[in-house]
Length: 393
Image (cartoon, rainbow, N blue to C red; front, side, top):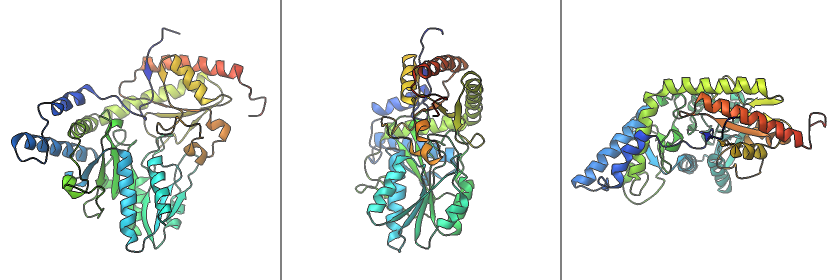
């Protein structure tokens, strides 16, 4: 194998900030530092930048600028949408929420909080590819259902859910519908008007923008209570001086994502397919987790039988290849992936599963280097493993 290089294949965890994004952000740390709520010139310059960023983020998802509310992260957007909507509808007698077993922990933990507050939560199962059963969803809706929240695309296995159909079911029963689109944003075409969603969560650092800034789309006409109280920022919905540099960066990243979406999808789909084709040829006893037809273009979640994923991750890291054993928010834990468990992967195989995700800066040479490192690492681990095909694992 050639000399060690650095190959980053964990774009689902986070992405590097693009140079164009950083250049647009830099002035707002220094000469354009005004508070957007101030009436003098430097403040109004900041307010104009805030408005432009809101327009850019809205354009990426086909929304109106006034429907975009900036947050600190996708996690905050999820918490705001789910908890505040449920609490608001409880006043009208609604005490039931529907979600799925494969949601991000930001959503699952929000639902656990609601359960402590007296709500009933239905956690829908999924099929082996990670799809929610629409018949089960319809059957789960009750007269007191306040909200349905199903993620757009799964962060671990990449499966893209039938969001438009779910939104149609929710609307037909008069139930609010939220989707966590953090992984889908910038990786698939999103038009909130076509989808019919009521609320949609986003995050900048998944689309080559800065960390610490996200947004929540709230469809015009949907009543969502304020999330933070204080000043009149974000149309009186989220008080506190805005993270202007982050918002400007998010806006530029959104603009780049919208302009380059087709080329981005074509490139990373090609790299993903190349990787999978050659991995299957070179490494026996592997399985691809998640749907192969309705899947995020850069996602590959692979089970390598008879080895531990953490050991494989460390060997790849020693070779300069950065990958993940699951969600970045939970990969430090040895707890088996709740997503892989939900799709029926045996627990011993869950521990042998690794997520690879490619992005805009990935090259064919990176993939070839990774395949070489991966083939050698898997062979090494299997040669010293206490389990094997013969042992019945």
